[in-house]
Each structure stands twice: as C-alpha cells, then as structure tokens.
Image 1: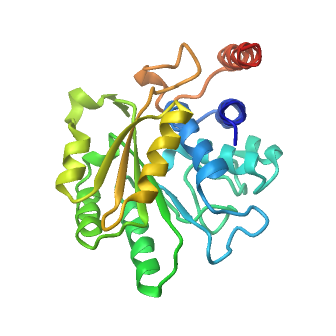
Image 2: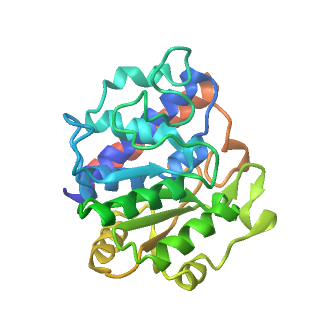
Length: 278
C-alpha cells in the first residue's frame, strides 16, 4: 500500500481513538495515539488477516500486550472492517463488545485477552511455540510498552523465546518514554532496550514508529531473520498527532472534554488537508 494511504488510515485511526475515549469519558489516549502508526502498518501492510474470517487457522496472530491502548486496536480493527465504526462510541459501555481492555471472547479480530501488564508477551510466545510444534507457518506479533517491560515476566518470556529460536515471533516495543505517572527514565528505565534484547538472543532493530518507510524496512528485515525472534524498538511520541497531548504524562489515562476533543479533531483534520496538498 502507498505510504500516503497508510498515513491517511493512521490519521483516521487517531480520530477514532479520540472519539472512543471522548464518548467513554475514560480511557488511555496517549499510548493509543503513540501506537497508531504501528498498528496501521501491521493490519494494512504486514499481517495475513481477513476481516471476513477473523478466526481463519492460518492467520497471523496479534497480541496487544499493553492492553490499555485498546482504543487504537479497536480503531484499526474497525477501519479494517472487522466491525462497524459506529460501534466505537460504545467503548467501555455496559454490554458493549468493546471493553476497556481487549477480550478475545467478545471482539472479532482480538486474538488474546490482555490488560495485566507483562502477561501478553507470554501468551504471544506460547502462540509462536505452538506454530513451531504443529508445523504452521503463521507469524505472531506482540506490542508492548516501554514502561511495561519493567515487569519481570516480560524477560522470562523473552528469554524462553530467544532460547527456543522462535523466529516466527516479532516483538514491538512502543518506546514513547512515558508511563502512568511519569517518564520511564525517572521511574525505572529499561534502557538500553536494544542491547537487552540482544542479550536475550533476539534480533534487535531500532525504528521510527511514526515513519512508514522506517517501519516497512524494520518489518521486512524481521522476515529475513532465522533462528531467533525479532524485537523492533519503535521510537514514538506519547499522544502523537495532537499538539497539547504530545509528551504529556497527564494524557496517559485522561479523556478530553468537549472543547479539547473538538480542538484535537480540528488539528487532525488540518494535518490531513496539509498532507493532501503535498
């Protein structure tokens, strides 16, 4: 798909994220906006998936280990056609299939229920191991946060994946530098992430998580790697695309009010108009 088309989809995803969180009056916009380009690339360029058959056996698997960023996942699934976009305004509503964290039993296209940070990657490793044991050729993709990888279970899972040579597993770290109540650096920095991944026998790639050329190069490189998993450390900006949300800790888990929502949507509209004129 052309780069501009991916950029257009990602912009719609960002608008969807804001709409979800605004109507829910709760949620996590910052980390959802930072991962929007990564998820757009995965679903519209990289992964073998089919919205008409979400459970097809040979599909690639996706695990959103940083489950609180589910507004981004729902937005991409809706843009891809897994369910109507109109459903997005029911985020976190009683009886909705779009709850605050992903639920594989409720939502088409969700392969793993997540939410307790650090656990999603273990499930992804299990999926990758299963494919190896059964001789299936599907690939497994997991997205984690850089704050999330402070959890010890993450490194147990990665150690296992590296030692078992799970080259059908691609781990993406959404490295936006901010977590719930401060910067990753001041709370418990896992840096250098790429060197740690290498020490755990993963092939490490550093990419720009907001540049589709950089993402394309990283994921294509990952497909050439044999004998070990790949970790893509994607450098991102928390709240990307909305000026007053970018790099602000307060927007990790806060919903915009009406005025803020309208201002954010206007910014994204103007960014789209500017892109079309390029």
